[in-house]
Image (tube, rainbow, N blue to C red; front, side, top):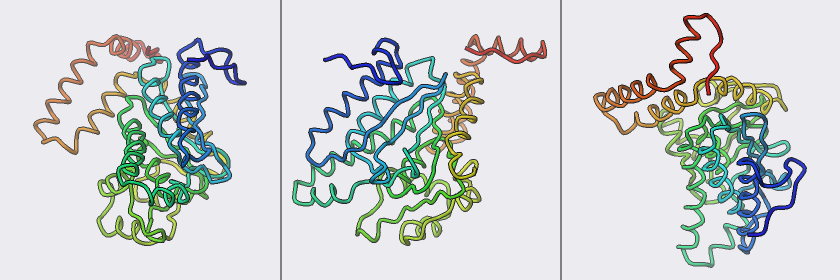
Length: 296
C-alpha cells in the first residue's frame, strides 16, 4: 500500500494515531470507486487522549456515505485497541451533525438488485455496531440537524451533548421509507411506545431540550459550543480508570439480554477483575492518601 502523504495534523503515518488516520484515508479512497458514493468523508484528529471523528460534507449537511461507514469502523476498532485513546467524540463539520443517508444515491439503487441495497445498509449498521461495541466512551457532539440515519448515529453513541439549536428528526415518511441504523431499537428501549411512533411517523423535529427532558441528551449547550462541552466531558472521562469505564459500559449493554441472576454474576466477575487490576491499587491508595489518582 502506498504510504500516506503528510497532512496538516500529522507528520508521517508512524504513530498508532497516524496509522489510524492513514487507514481512514485509504478506506475513503477505496469506497470512492462506488458510483453511488457521496463525497462525504470521515476525518480523525487527536487532542491528547481524545479522538475526534468528524463527518465532513457541509454542502449536504454531512450526509452519510459508504466511505464514512468503512472509515468509521476502522477508526473505532483501532481506537479500541489503542490504550492512548481514552474517549471518542463524533461530530459533524460546520453547522450540522448529519443529515443521514443520501436520497439521490438511494433512488439510484432502486434499479439495482435488492442485495446491493442490503449490503449498503449492512455497512451502515457495521458502523453503528462499532460505536456501541467500542469499549471507550463515545460522545456525540450535535449542532444543527441530526436527521434519519444521522439521528440513529447520535443515539448509538454513549452520551449526547447537543447545542440549544439542535434538532432531531427520525421520520422517513415523506420519502416513503422506514428507519435504519438502530433508531427504533434505541428509542424503543428509552421511551414509551406512543412517543416513539410519533417520532417515527411525523416529520416535526424534536428539540435538544425535549430530548434532554426524555433522558436522551445529557447536556444542552449554547449554539456552537457542543464540541467544546463534549471535549470537557471527554477530558473528565479520560482521567478515570479505563478498565472500570469499559466494565460499566459492558454491564449496561448486557442488561437487556440478562436476567437479574445473570447480571449479578456479570457484575461479580467484572468487580473481581477490576479489583485485581493495577488501577484499583492506585485508586485505593489515592483514596486513603487523600490525593487525585493517576490511572494508566
